[in-house]
Length: 245
Image (cartoon, rainbow, N blue to C red):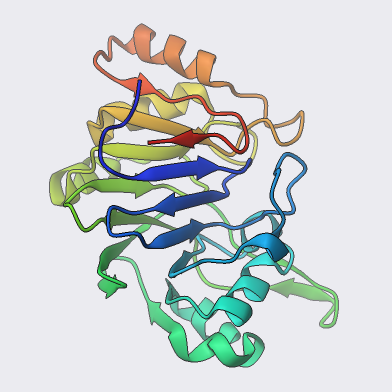
C-alpha cells in the first residue's frame, strides 16, 4: 500500500534511509551506505540537504560515510551536542553547517522541522588512536515534520520505552521507522508495543537482516501486532533499494 504523503523513502539496508520531501529536499538518515545489503555507495550520493545521524556507532555514522557526505555536500546537520563538538574538528569544510542540539529541542533545516527525542541504547565506538572508546553523545531519535505537515518518527537504535506515549502526545507522528532486528535493539515483540504507544498508522521496519544476529522480520512484527490486537497499521516491507512513496 502506498504512503500517499508526497514523500519518497528509499531504504538502503540496515538503518540507512534516503528521503525526498514534498519540497524536493533530500534528507539522509544514518547513512551507512557501506552496509552489506546496500545497492548504493556513499561516493555515489550526489544530493543531501539535511543529514541526521542517531548515534555514533559505526553502523550509523557509516565508517566514514556520514563524514564523507557531510564534508563533500555540506548539508545542514542537526545532531547531539557532543557529536557536534567532534565534527567541528573532523568534518572539514562542512562543519559550519552543523547544529548542536539535545533531546527536546527543535530546529528548522532546509524548511524541515527536526525535533530530537531520547532513545535507549549506547553510543560509544572504538577509537584506535586513543586505545579506548570514543563517546559521541547520547543516542537519540528524531521527529521530522515535512513541508506539507507530514510528521514521522525515526527511532534510531532503541528499546521500546514508556515515554513513547509522550512522543505521540506532543508530536503525533503518522509513521514510525522502527528497528526490529533484536539483540542490539528491540525486536518485533517490543516494536509492536512501540507502535501501540506511538499510535501510528504506518511502520517502516529498519535495522534488521543485515547480519544473522538481527533476526527479527516484518512478518513477525505483523504477527505481534495482531497478537496485541493492534489494527489499522500498515507494515511497509522494502527490499534494499526499494522506495515507499
